[in-house]
Image 1 (cartoon, each protein chain N blue to C red):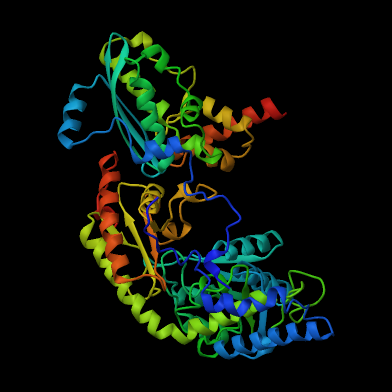
Image 2 (cartoon, each protein chain N blue to C red):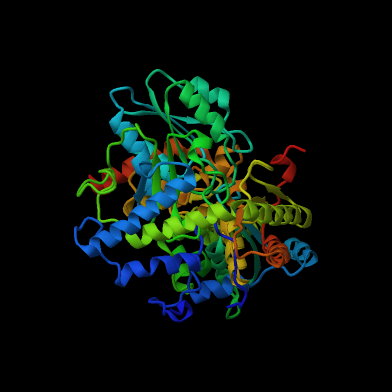
Amino acid sequence: MNMENVKLNERKNEWFYTDVVRDHFFNPRNIFKTNEEAKEFEKAADGKGIVGSPQCGDMMEMWIKVKDDRIVDCKWRTYGCASAIASTSILSLMLTEDGGMRIDDALKIKPQDIVKRLLDLPARKFHCSVLGDKALRAAINDYFRRTGQYGRIVADGAKVIDKVLKITDKDIEEAVLSGALTLEDVQKRTKVGTHDRSCIPEVEQLIEFYRKKYFG
Amino acid sequence: MTTKNIYMDHASTTPTRKEVVMAMLPYFANEYGNPGSMHFKGLSAKNALDVARGDVAAVIGASPSEIVFTGSGTESVNLAIKGIAHAYKQNGRHIITQKTEHHAVFDSCKALEKEGFEVTYLNVDRNGLVDLKKLEEAIRPDTILITIMYANNEIGTVQPIKEIAKIAKARNVLFHTDACQAGGLLDINVKNLGVDLLTLNGSKIYGPKGTGMLYVRAGVKLEPVIHGGGQEFGLRSGTENVAGIVGFATALKLAQEERLEESKRLTALRDKLISGILERIPKTFLNGHPTQRLPNNVNVTILDIEGEAIVLHLSELGICASTGSACTSKILEPSHVIRAIGLPYEAAHGSVRLTLGKSNTVADVEYVLEVLSKVVERLRKISPVNLRVEDFVKV
């Protein structure tokens, strides 16, 4: 019997994510080519945002340049898995294509919008690896602060609960709504409190609140 | 896709070797009988089963009646731990294990905790070794079982099994070891080791997946986990997987015949790979014991970048590796083993495991060193993290 000729009964699948994720993971857009370029850009940037930490497995830094209230340039650095890298890369593209996105539109970007452009992400990767919108919001708020536009700073109508991961009460509400009813389950989805442990009592109260609100 | 095909994930699973496939083939379409039948087809299958059991017993220094074939290493572990707990609960309800065990052990213990058993999870040191004094101290009058793995699947640390067996014996406590990672590379003679129960599986020793074995020393009682037709001395019901068992026995026999030579070869490759990584890539360190480790295991932490990204880049370049990063685990938790040896989350997220095997050569090791250095450089270029290696390794 010739074992080499035995056919596989499954489609060949050599990549875990979508092709768009693959493209942006292997060819990330808007990254710094050299250290010198990074130093220059950071100096000239109009806003900078950081979210996450190496402890929780994902961390992003984003710099934006703003002209006429549009984001005309954006660079980033990301520590994390393929979906984290790809989602930051595609976000940077979304912001800078077609002459740059208006700031008010950029503030409306949700993780879902990023995932849509990536064509999909595994559900369990959704909450933890798509932090780009939060890094962006931090960068825009930084820009508002630097330019004295304090009235435009967006607290997102939500309260930041986890100061390191910038996780808000809205994120926790969303997690509860999607079926996470214990601290453990909410942490699996959001990683809330994995670094900033001081927020855990508040998180537990919120879970209890939303659990009662939605599930009686 | 690259044409390179360098498989360095033998701790996950091994290919089934050709001799094993050939030995198994007659037992699918021709010798398909049920070993429980009285006609000639059944007897032929039973004969194959008996020969396989005899072979396995001879290889590990046991009697055929002490060998129970199962469907996986996980199943053997479940049978050993739950089987002992349920059979000996009149003597006590305390079990001792340690913190770097496989989930099969942990979750079996957790299931027993729900039934009212008490489990002690011993700490390990920075190299992943159990402290024998702490083990002795943990034994209580109601301790019925110690279960400690032979060699760790992630960091390769080899526990002092003989010493543990001596302690267990002196205190009259049964001792099970999960030897899944050791089957092809270490001494698994149960008399030499002095163990009461020992788990092995086929898929780590170039045998078929879905096969496992539990050695149960004569005189040790077990409650079955799977009930039914009473196969495998009443300990594991279900029609025997004759082809799988024949394959497992063939694989084990070959692995143990080649063990010394292959271990020596792999140890040299392993050390070349470890020193190559530590010398060529800045801010890296070895996880697990430097010498008391499996001949085929390399586990390093590469700071400032994340394991899944490394593994996917390596895969793109034709190298199969794995990581202890949370991103790749189903529960999004980083490796409990890296955490147990006292390292923080970020050290687990950046851990990469390369486990060598039969197909690997010196040229493979050189290629991996070259590729890994480049991948690390690429990912560090886009990383905002800048940790200090001194904070992880005592200089």
